[in-house]
Image (tube, rainbow, N blue to C red; front, side, top):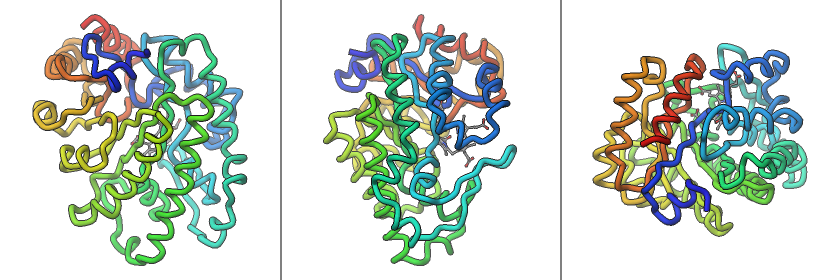
Length: 333
Ligand code: 1CP
């Protein structure tokens, strides 16, 4: 069994497996080379002649235990008919939402539009380098997708409450998101995904009283579905106030923690496998500091099923040599 699955399913703690969020991305010069000649990010995500190569780039450099398919959480709104663009230095820009138009999107149309992603997953899963490693595929959590679809750009720090006022519209939109997320997840698993990660990057924006409606209920629906397909699911509810309540309510197979939570507290309160935590900024400092901080997580979780990762994606300004140092450090622990 692959080291990550062994950790998640058998709760094995002897060797700490490692993969890194955004491990395929702008900190790698070989990725920047490809990006330079592929300025349209959505088109790049839909080019199965290139995305398998990008997905495998970090595995050619480092001894990682998983690949994560090169795609984006915003491929879902794109697939159901909301326009998505990425502007350099600004981030994603989405078009106005038109439910009449979205309601005309059938499962078939959606799957055809995103077919290059599924083809890329098939290609990567057949690559020798993946032997005894995992191919992680992913989706945005319903709340995080709702945020981008309504706000039409990154919310940065807060979301305009007015966007959530039309309850009937929001409920309809959540149903649509749930439906297509399940189709997208199923397609990815059929193509070769061995683990699904759910990114709830904006979970921290939800008030306590709204957690049930926007986070718990929609996430439980997805997790039940993924479990019914016999595939492990890792959740990353970034900046939620209460990880213990989250884990006990939605019951993922593993949880990724962000860098603002105290890992000692997590160890005390959470009994499912844990992933991540290290602040990506630490990789911008020096090796000594990186060692000290990485060892902190390794020591705290040495008797707990733990997958090494960061508390958010690796930053574009990271020196690839620091990644190399980190991966070797974890492997030697
Ligand atoms: O070259 C570039 O400028 C593109 C940068 C980039 C990359 C490399 C974007 C735009 N998306 C991706 C790939 C990506 N996105 C992956 C696969 C690569 C890997 O992990 O190795 C994954 C898992 C994601 C997930 C993703 N996209 C999330 C969840 C994780 C997180 O960072 O919180 C989110 C919120 C997005 C939206 C998105 N896509 C891209 C950007 C810059 C953003 C964030 C916008 C914002 O700040 O709100």
